[in-house]
Length: 330
Image (cartoon, rainbow, N blue to C red):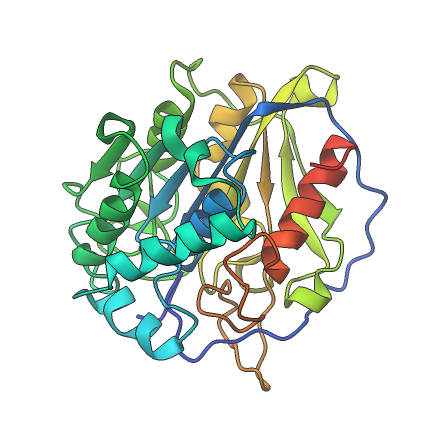
């Protein structure tokens, strides 16, 4: 998810409700393997993926963060979000951990003990001039307090800018430009899946369908009316399938780039051969107060002070969308 303003750069971003203007049929349901639900995201989407993971750790078994920092990094303040949570420096790790433990104790997020057997993959490209490498290192430090060290993978040696590195899709590897996919001869999606899911079948042609589904209550959470979902042929035929939730960055939703992120980030090729649905939630942009012109996920509190908990407006919509796909409340 500075032209420098992109996938997860939150300027003064705060989304109000939005619509993608498309009517959608009832959400189809699939046989969802609840033991195989993972998340990932880029930049602002990485922060959102971390929030989703920590808030629902009883359900979500792993997370991949590209150019994102630790849970609750901004502490509900855009000033901190644009400061050490992007530029590096002291993020106050002890405070972030204390908040997570407090929210777990109060029941506002799932018990942190659920994270003990999870896998985490973190990435910072050597050409990234938007999010500092210290930010991603802080995310690794946060998880290291809750997850065994052997379950954490930190990748910092790939020449890639701020965006999603792919094998051959997107703009040149040294370029920061829409759709913020970079052809770097590096398969970030494959690295995420292999880390979070273990041994996999090799990627194949993504011959399934990319469909739109309703995001229940999306407008009230500053999200679009619909999300995108990649459906492999096996899942459509009724086989049991896991789900991976992939969060776009700023200026990377369907409002800005159509289905370029969902079609080109590299997830679908692995999903097709490994019985995985891929849910691509979509956030809305707004040019009026509250201001969010680049369509960034809420990782500093524009939807309310509980944004990083199970009660967070966007967290709730994503869970409702996932529940609709599974045909049961998750």
